[in-house]
Image 1: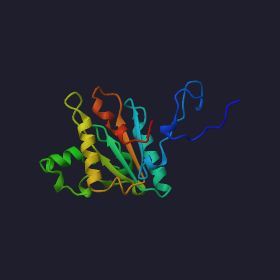
Image 2: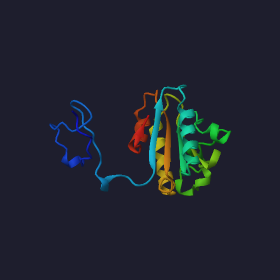
Image 3: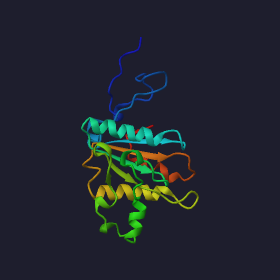
Image 4: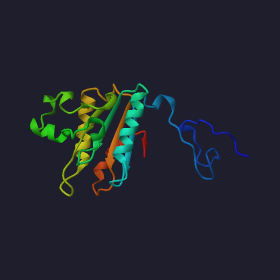
Length: 182
C-alpha cells in the first residue's frame, strides 16, 4: 500500500527512497522560502495553428474575471497573440524599440502595453522574420522592459504565448520565467 504524498524539502530528498508518485519517480517541491511569491507565470508552447493564442487569451480572460491582474505576452513574429483581446494588431516591442533607436529608457509602458478585454494587459514581443534572427533576444528585451517598469511585479498572472515550431532556441527563454509550461 502506498503512503500518502509527503512534502519534503529538496535538500532532504534521498534519491534511493520510495517517496514519490510511482516506481523510480519523486514528487519534488521547492522549500517554502525559495518559492516565488509574485506572479504565476505560464508558458503556452506548440506548433503553429493548434490554438495557442486562443488558449492563452481564454486563460487571460478567465484569470482576469477572477480579479487577477494579467499580462499576456505574445512571442511570435506575426504579433497576433493578443488580437482577440484587443481587436487589432498591436505594435511590437521590437518595433517600438526601433522607433527610439533602441534607447529603452525613452519608452513608457503605454508605448508597448495595450489594454485588452476585461483589463488584460497585452504585449506583443514580435521578432525577426523566419530564418533571419533569434526571437529569444526580443523576448528577453520584452521581459527586461516589463521588469524595469515593474509590470511583472505588479501582476498576478503572466502568460507567454510562444511559437514552438522554430529552430531558434531563443524561444525557450520564457521557460526561465514560467512556473508551468503547456
